[in-house]
Image 1 (spheres, rainbow, N blue to C red):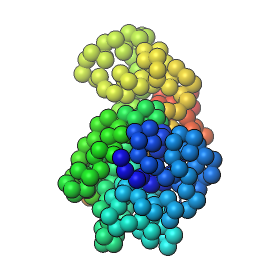
Image 2 (tube, rainbow, N blue to C red; image 1 turned 120 degrees about the vertical axis):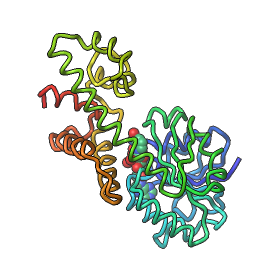
Image 3 (cartoon, protein in one colour; image 1 turned 60 degrees about the vertical axis):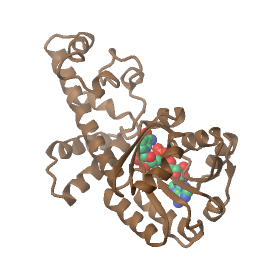
Length: 296
Ligand code: NAD
């Protein structure tokens, strides 16, 4: 079992940190929010007062932060990770950030002598707590091999996506597909209902036909067919509109950077922007069903 530094103990990081402690690692935890540190301590980690304190002696340094600018700051500020961590430490960033940012950060940290991977996750808060996340990892073969066992204490599926940034590339393409498919599923349920089919009847048929997709069978945006989906709980997140909008904007930027045509990704971005502007920022992203129905 290793010495692990964990920085960023929010909705996702708190559960991930707890699972590492539960697996027997010696985890030192740091966040700007002292209450988050207290919670990590109650789940088996040791609290740190600074990043320097957190990363001292760490074999692995995990970050789970809101966006690229936070990761950059935490890595490279004078009081940041690369000023204090052992050069032998493996730096694992699990935050969702731009592909270009991930590649810049990896290249800067590797120039300083560190081994790095980008390892964004799919699965949300429930999977973070349950230790069933999917990790999409970018980095060298050696860096992936060094990180794999640790990541498997927090996740069920650990994929090596390729070189640095490829984890974020997989994540951004996947979440663009999810954003689009949730809108498409909402449109289909609304159309079927207006043509006279109940949500249950359309689900019964389409979930066994060619329209079947995760947005339908695991997370149906129409209330009724999937009891656990947020649609049956007033669209309580789940995965918030703000998070989907962030991910779709990252996908748009990534697409532009490589001249990839993403017309539906662009349209989906505008639709979730509308939900955000309408004050539904914290609702689950499947609330787009209500917009399609004309209720928003
Ligand atoms: P969050 O806002 O709940 O947590 C982020 C934490 O980072 C906060 O506790 C904050 O205090 C801390 N932080 C910010 N700046 C810091 C700094 N300089 N030093 C130390 N701590 C700092 O966010 P979250 O929902 O846990 O998401 C984290 C990342 O995971 C994001 O990149 C998000 O896009 C991604 N993600 C989230 C979900 C989800 O369902 N919430 C799913 C998949 C991926």
